[in-house]
Image (tube, rainbow, N blue to C red):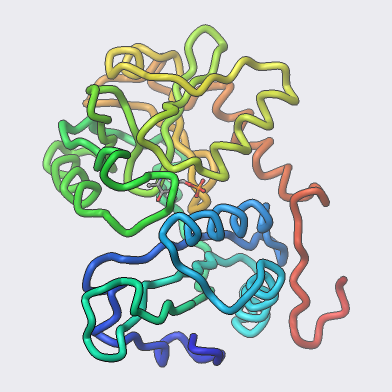
Length: 293
Ligand code: PLP
């Protein structure tokens, strides 16, 4: 933060930063698994596209950000980590309300790897509630720019908890399925995989599902998913950097398919973690005192 590496408790932000005051920020989250980043290049690409769209800039190239992220993880010593990097609008020297006057700020941190679903939920499958909360429409806030406009998500989470569910799915403005707090949604029907194409973040894990399906010769489409189609799917799962591929076994209290974690979902989960061994996607961390390259 501000050009320094610090213990996370010491990383403090000004209350005047517009990232805090206006949620005027973009960010990304990559993960490290067994000492290597997974698809770091894709996360960096998404982050830099987001900054460009928001008219933000930082004094680092992609290669320099990659180096900073590697250093954060190496200094933390975590073999598996959740690595977040953020660009905030920053502060304006004279309290100007014009965003062009602000000095953008870059922050990155590494904490232990975390998951949307805990161990028990991974085992039995997530219980989802389809809420009537609409995701902020893309014409207001572009969902492909990863952002902190989360009040819709938090509202949906409270609605889901009230109904005894683990987490929530939000709808797009046409009433179709969009995404949930920190994850993309997938349905499988008759062996065909689908995921919403509008009103969603283009998740890197979502992309990994497209890649795995292409390798396996399974059809995978980005398209509108009506709530009824999700509920009558044979299998469902959600995807996120925070947890990977996570199975869903009930929606609004009804079983999805057999009510057990689906076979294709299980296969996707296994292949997703196998892909972490693939050199095409790995950037190995050099920890202090380690000789691994
Ligand atoms: N959708 C939203 C709103 C998210 O915040 C996230 C990740 O945090 C995702 C989807 C999943 O994206 P990814 O697979 O890149 O982690």
